[in-house]
Length: 574
Image 1: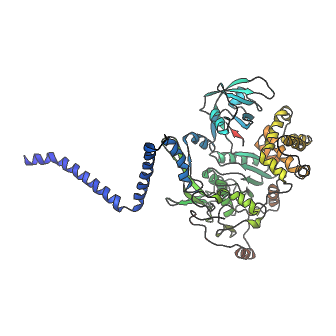
Image 2 (image 1 turned 120 degrees about the horizontal axis):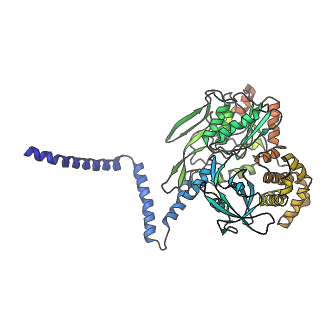
Image 3 (image 1 turned 135 degrees about the vertical axis):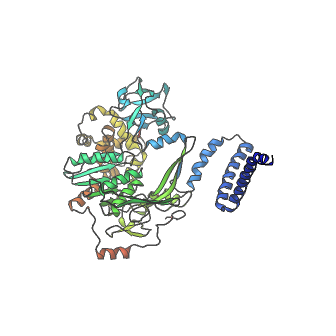
């Protein structure tokens, strides 16, 4: 009987032992496992308590969800300049920017005088099939007027984009039309190209412009290379100017196409992210072609990974101006409500060991936000001697000196061209009047302009139309006083800007880029480098090494942590 009673009570004894074990374990975990966990738990409770107190006791009614939405970006901004919070309503748009396609109506638009103007229509896209044409103004969406202050880029995108196969009814007003016509567009997949131009600069030099590193950039590059290879391709230029970056994987794939086997492309490392190296596999088809990479102060992130890999491996020549200096790795983390954060978890390092990220201070860092302006005012855009090398000196495979402190410094510096810049030109460019004039000129002459077979034919015509005088008269009526001497001095720049925008409005990015490259000093320098056979960097001589050692100060080693290091960083599709 005693044994049976014991057997019956045994499960109870075991349950009590488990509970006691849990309580003891919790006690020791809370008191002896380290202060850091306690601090995090206490701070988390403190934030929750604050929200509860506000909700219960604040004098006015408060939308706690809205308060949290506003607080999230502020919290992340205390970490670094690139950790960000993205609200649920903006996540899709943020992801669309780097995807190979998105679902929409297939137009390129601009907003003028509180109205959507259709600038271009995607060939064979949903809008074109429904009868939308370039030059149309969208005045209503789904039966409701859409004009006035409500018309913003964000709101326009929200209303025009949507799930595939859904319908949207547009009210359109054609150029000089007095009656609105209505079309129903069935949304569909709209391809997004990350390579905006592919053509031959001359008989043997190919040119590829990559405007962002998206998920489809590498396949696009292979198509561009195949296209150029049919035209006696012997030299190659990859233009990364203005490229803000994107997916690291695309940059690594492209670098792999040009590097021999077993070359380090990039590595990343963080406090909770063990070092991860990315090497070339030797399967690239263009390992021996003379190569030049173009960069400028806006080239960032994945652009700097590619440029750094080519430079540190002495695989090609980097031409232009010092790049932006964005070398922090963001990991996307989603919340249940559909919002997400992009949290910095590691840093990028080039093959020589340079950290690409420029210095920053945790929290609101005015110097970081105004870095490009400070560089401009310091004269870095105009003189190579004005570039501040504030980091350690590193060396490429051949022993050439390269510098830490943020960004990629080009092998060959090409200053920004200031010839012809006047206060009149600056005001005209900054005011947006050039864009406005070009769009209105395009609208008024769309029939004539659309008759030209190519860019060169159109440009020849436009230059005979006294286009600068037409703009000056337009600007004078819209707030920019005529300054004849300045207009004369800036004539070439004004004509180039106005004509380029008209070309863009009528043709495409490829033709637009070709026009801008015609008298570009960086392109001219690139062609000279190929002509002289200097695309492959050479090992520095003893004299070169001595000069480098003597001339470059090394105040500190910037390979280490950056937090708290003080430093002195449209048209839309729908």
